[in-house]
Length: 109
Length: 254
Image (tube, rainbow over all chains, first blue to last red; front, side, top):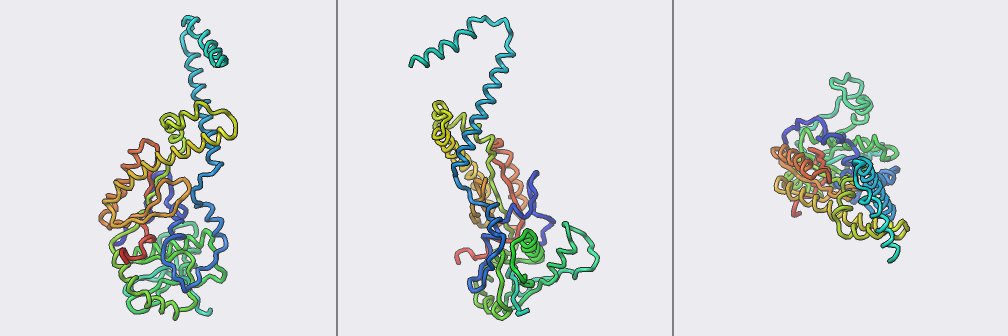
C-alpha cells in the first residue's frame, strides 16, 4: 500500500474528522473472534447513547410540530412587516373589511 | 502478566511494522494533546506472528474500559499500522487470553484473512454520511408535501393534532432525505470497489463506507464536495477518510 499523504482523516469544513465521526465503525465493524472474550466494556452504554439509532419518537414529532409553529409565526411576522411597510395611501376599503368577512364566513359554517 | 493481549488488527507476517518510539525520547513532531502519554500507551504495541499472518497486539488493560482515550488509542494504533501497510482492524475491545491461543486463531482463519488482506491492499475506506438540515427540510416539506400541507391547514394546538402533524413531517422529511441519500450513493458507487452499509446513526440519512482504490481517493472526495454543494442545503454530505478498512475485514464473496 502506498503511504497516505494526509496526516489526518479528511473532513469537510466545520467538522473535525475525529473520534466521534467514525466511532460506530470501531464499535460495530472489524473482526470479532468468537473464541475470545470481547470485554464487557464499562462506559460503552453511554457512548452508545451518543451514536444512538434514529428512533422516530413522539419527542421528534412534537419537535417538528413546534418547528412548523415557529415557521408560521415567522411567516406571519414577515407578512405583518410587509403590510406595515405598505404605503398608507392604500384605499382603506381594501384592507379593513376583508378579514372581517372571512371571519364571519368561517363562524357561520 | 498471564499473557493476555489486546488485539488491534491482523496483518501479513511481512508487514513493515515499526514499533513506536519508546516514551521519554524527544518527540520530533509533537501531535495531539498529550503525545508523551499517547506514546507511553502505544509503546507496548508489537506483532505476534503465526505462519503467513501476524496480529498487532498491545498489553491487555488490567481493567478493560471504553473511555475516550481507549477508543482513541484503538483508532490511533490502527491508523499508524495501516500507514505502514495493509491491516484488517479488529472491533474495539477484543482481548486474547494468551499468545498461543491467538496464534492458533490466526492459523485457523489464515485463508480468509489473507483473502481479505489482498482485497484491501492499495485501497482505503471512506465513510460517507448524508446529514439532513432539519430547518431547511422542515420548511421544504411544510411548503411542498401534500399531506403536511393538508394537516397543517386543519391542525389545532391539541396534543393529538400536533402529534399527527409532527409524524407527517417526520415521514415527509425521511422520504425527501432518502431521495438525496440515494442520489449521493448512486453518484459515488461507480468510484468504489465495494460498499458496506454502516449502522444507523442519529441524524444521518445515509451512513455508508466505500472501499476506494488509492488512485481514486481524490476523485471520491471531489465528488463528495460537489454533491454537498449540489443539494441546495437540504443535506450536507460528509466524507471521513482515508481510513483503515474497518468495514471490509471479510473477503467479498467469502
